[in-house]
Each structure stands twice: as structure tokens, then as C-alpha cells.
Length: 259
Figure (cartoon, rainbow, N blue to C red):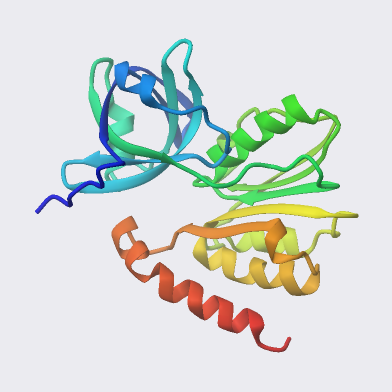
């Protein structure tokens, strides 16, 4: 049975304007429609919407929203016929309809950090790219360390930068599971000097060791870190969301244990 919607979270319907192939594994879908007029200004950089494919929901970050042109962009990771949203995006045509709920969101880079650490895989790339857009405009001299894991060089894409942004593209090898190479890169890096603000999202199996590293080894206060698993290897979104609370509770307990 379809899940009832909260009365304050209406289902909106948008239509496809065009699509853009950003990399071999990522497609941008630009959507429009009168329902965008009800969207609030996006004050966060991790804003997301819940896409509805029949009775199935999938969560995706809003890459950008232009209320003047009435265009909303969402970037989809595509792996052939795998999954639900990716194949839809790969074959989307102008005029196709998409139903969604949102937006939600809670994080944006602050103005008073000495350094920003942005870490993620393909799933987190849209939110990290949106944060870089914000920093490049609002704090063009901000120090930003970015670690992004993708399959290979062809999956890198242009990103906005400040005058002190270092972007480290991490490529998975055949021996690496998702997140392993990224974890090694961050753990092997030097801690940025001063008050560090971190945004670390992606595979849950990557988030677990990095959470401990940031809180214990680098001693970054929890309130300065946004860290969460967007997905987990071997699980679809329904399975991951069902077990996410228990996974996070175990992570918290292990984090509080003596090093």
C-alpha cells in the first residue's frame, strides 16, 4: 500500500527539461514545473528530495535550484540497469514526469571555520559540489581540502574552487571496496590547522573508520562534523534505512569506547 504523506510534505510533480551526461557514471536531470514556485530558497548545501517511483522512494541531493528560470537539477549515479533511479535518469526524455517530496536539508559550510574538509564518494559528490559553489562565492579565500572517490579519471568533473582549495581525486582499484581508498587517503593526510569543519558522507563502511579518526585522532568536536552513511554496500535504500539507526547506535558506542 502507498505510504500516506504528511500534510506538510506535499507530493510535487515536475517534468524533465533536458539531461546532461556529466561523466560515464553520472547524469544530470534538469526539471521544471509550477510546483517549483512553492520551493523555499535553499539555505543549505545538502538539500535533498524524496523521489517517488510508484510506491518506492529514493533520496537524492538537489545539485542546484534556480527559481528565476524555474529549473532544479539532480545528479544521478548510473550503473547500467542496476537500481531504480539511475536507469530512469539515463533514459529520461523532455516532458517525462517525476514526483517528489521535499526539500529537506540541514548543513552548509560556516563562515568562521579556519579550514573545510569535504569527503565523499559519487553519492556525496552533488552535496560537496554545492558546498564548493557556496564557498567559492561567499568565501573565495577559504581553505578547503576535498577528497572524492570515483571509479577512475573519466569520472572526475569540474568543480568550483576558492583560491586555497585542494581537490584530491581518489580512484578505486580492482582490489578496493567502495570507500577503502578514500579512507586511506584521509587517514594518511595531515590535519588542517585551526578550527576544522568537516562534511563526510558516502558509503557507511567508509564513514565508520573516518568518524573515529576525526573525533579521536584529529580531535575535531562533534558539533563541527556532519558525517553519515548515504548508502551501504549490498543494500538498497529501503534495506539501509531500515538498519541505519542500529548501525549508527553501534558506531556511537564504539566511538565512545577507549582508543
